[in-house]
Image 1 (cartoon, rainbow over the protein chains, first blue to last red):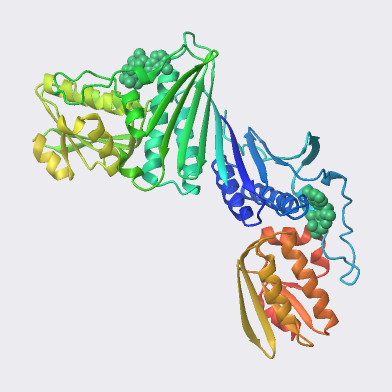
Image 2 (image 1 turned 180 degrees about the horizontal axis):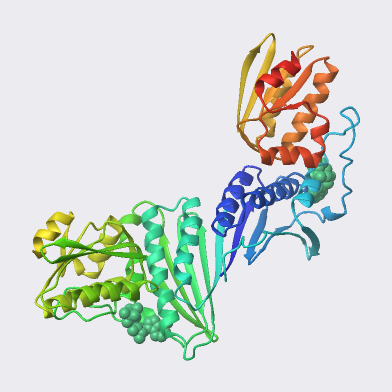
Length: 145
Length: 145
Length: 112
Length: 112
Ligand SMILES: Nc1ncnc2c1ncn2[C@@H]1O[C@H](COP(=O)(O)OP(=O)(O)O)[C@@H](O)[C@H]1O
Ligand SMILES: Nc1ncnc2c1ncn2[C@@H]1O[C@H](COP(=O)(O)OP(=O)(O)O)[C@@H](O)[C@H]1O
């Protein structure tokens, strides 16, 4: 059995906690280890927060589509938004070795998303951004079949 | 937030319990009352069992697609199979008032599916059967039978 | 699903069905239940207090069992149906066909 | 998220962050924490033993707090990080920047 969870969210930060609960439940029943669920949720939190904070010019309501797919041992999540074109895979990593004084505030979100997942792929698709994040769930993590 | 769960199953009876677990988790997190979840699971069990038992001529493996959608207070499930054309909404209801001696064995599956849900709609779509079952999750859904 | 068979005293057999009786597990339930009904004048209590779920495949087995028990001049009673399971009996009209009891004691008395 | 502020003795303020500190709740966390750091020579322990989840939005607040505590000639220490939260600190390089303790006692000693 393969399983897909599709959520349609409004561009509001309050959606993120509910996304996390849904993903937790979807993944747990599929046998995904807790540590992998935590990482996927953190990566998606960062990606969704950025879309909500930076992708739109105006105040209006936008729909963000999130599709989480669990097939055998691969967990992947696709995030589609109709905001300004933005490829986060091109954002340079922060220098995590700086001292307290030199360390700039911010700039960790995209880095977290990349570090939590095995692969992050960006495509501009018409007037939409499509970001796909994927991660192996490890041996035997998925349901048989 | 609207949520869709899509499962792709093999035509094996052993899938049904796992479908039930997935639906339970998907619906519970969405706030669907336990009694409505039970009814949806029973309806889907009957529909899937019939497809697995009756829809195919040969022994080969077939994929059955199940899509469960929760939008506000409407819970709906769409079952798509590539088996022989069959419209279960046309199957006559059994006589549930017969005595033990007169009561025939069987013939309750489709009736259960219909009674558990508010609406069951069948469409033949190319070489596929598409059955949509829906139910209100809101006030009084429990009493609907 | 799990089926547990225990003697209920005075020749009565108690069949306890636990968990889910669906199309996938109905075969095992059928074998156990019909096996218990095979002797003449069978006295059977089906204890459903641990039964979480039953589909039409499970009701099919119960109806066959009830018919066969009658043919063999025996008695069959059910007990301990959880509310959801009870609803399924109501919808199918089986509430009027079966001897249904809230406690095992009452079901044992009914078949004795 | 919930933030609870309690006196830790000797002028130390203990800020306990519970639940999730994400982009939606970071603002409330920021107000509470920066408020506690506003006086000169602040001594702050951030107790994370009930903190289940922190995103970069939460780390942003902690980094601002650490910088400000230093500017105000104060001290800030963390304690009780759960493993997943600790991982987030490791990935961001914050483990080397912050004074991190396993127990509240040890963190209190560090800021006193
Ligand atoms: N979806 C997006 N659309 C436009 N700009 C974005 C988007 N996501 C990220 N950015 C830009 O990339 C920068 C880095 O993002 P991030 O790593 O999350 O750190 P931070 O949000 O703390 O700046 C943001 O400040 C923003 O300018
Ligand atoms: N998907 C299907 N394809 C072909 N025939 C079907 C299908 N579903 C049901 N049927 C037919 O409808 C009949 C009634 O089904 P049902 O109400 O589930 O009771 P039962 O399975 O006990 O016969 C079945 O016996 C079968 O002949």
